[in-house]
Length: 237
Length: 263
Image (cartoon, rainbow over all chains, first blue to last red):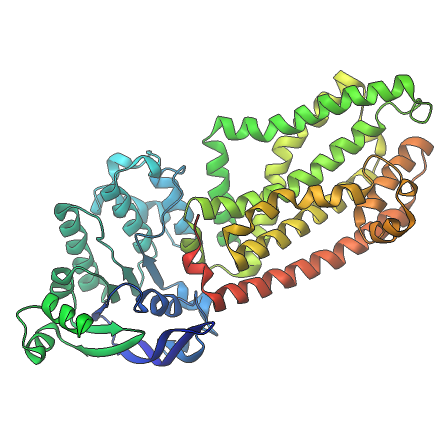
C-alpha cells in the first residue's frame, strides 16, 4: 500500500508539488493525470526516493521511503520513456545486470520466461540500441518486471508506440497486475488507457491534486462524455 | 553491502568493454602512445643530460605511473558518464543500490579498466626501451596503490560534481588531472617549483610518490617516509571525497537531478 501524506516539493522558489495526500491500496491500479509540468514526475520521483520531499512523507507498506529506501526499492520498479537501458548491451545482458541488481533468484529462468511472454526471444542477443522503439519498450517493461515488483510506477508506458504495441503492453500490464496483485501508479496522457486500466484516477494541476475518483464517477460529476473531456475541462478551467 | 549488486554493476561495464573491440583498443592505445612518446624523450635525455645519464627509465617510469593515475581517475569518471550518456542513470538509482555499493563497484571496475590499458604499456616498455618498472621493488605496489587511490579520489570528486550539477560538469572530468599535473612534480623534483608553490604541492600525495620514484631509481634507496606520507594524504583525501560524494547524492535528491539526468 502507498500512502502519501501532506507531500510538498519546492525547487528553490518554485512550488512543484503542493501538499498532496492520497492512498493506493494493494492490488489497485491508479491513474495520475495532468498536463505537462503539473508535478506528476516529481511526485513519482518522491515515491521512488529519487527526490527528497520538502515536507510530508511517502509511506510504503508501513515504511517511510526516506528511511527504508534500499529495502523498499527491492519490491518496486519503474518504467519511463525518458530513461533507457544501455544501448550497447544486448537485451539478455541488460536483463542479467538488472536481475542481479535486484537480487533475483533463478535469474536465467526468469529472463527466459520474460523473453517468452514479452515476445523478445528473437532479440535476446541483439544490442538494445538496435531495436525499434516498440521492441525497446518491451525490453524496458521486461526490466521493470524482472524483480516481480509488488509496486510498479509507470510513467507514460505506451508513449510514442503504435496502437498494436501499445495495446500489447496494456494487456500485459493488466495481466501482470491481476496475477501478481500488484499495486500500480500509472501516469499517462492516454485517456483510453487510463479508463481501461485504472480503478481510480487522480487529476493534478499546478502541483495539486484537484480531483480524484473512479473514471465513471468523474465523467458523471463533471457532466462530460469521457475522461478526455474531463481532463480538458479541468486543465482549461 | 551486497556482493551481487556490486557484481551486477561491474558486469554491466564488463559487457560494454567485451562487446567493443574499438573500446578495448582505445583503452590500450593511449597508454601505449604515451610510452612510445616518452620512451623517445627518455632516450634523448639519456644521451644529452648528465643528470639522467645513469637512469634511462626515470622519465619513462614516471610517465607510466602518471598514466596509471590518469587512467584510474578517467576510468572512474567514464563509468559514471557512460550511465548519463546512455540515459540509464535513473534506472540505476531506482534499483536498490546503496551509495556505498556504487562507490565500491565503480572503484573495483575502474581498476580493472585501468589495468587493461596499463599492462600492455608496462610490457612493451621493457623490450623497446629497456625500462623495467619492477626494479622499483616491493615499494612499487605501495606506489601503485597510492596513485590508484588518488585517481579514485579525483574520480569521486568529479562524479560528485556530475551528480550535483549534472552533465555540465563533464568538462571538469577531462581537465581535472591536467590541472594538478604541474603541481604533482611528475617529471621534475619539487625544488624546481617556486617556494610558495612548493607549499601547495606538498599537500598533494603525488609529490611524495614521484620524489620517491626518483629517489629509488637514482639512489637505489627506498624512503618509506615518503610512501607513508603519500598514503596518509591519500587516506585523508579519499575519506573526504567519499563524504563529498554522499553530500552530492543528498544534494541531487534535494535538487531532483537523479530523475532528470541526461545529455
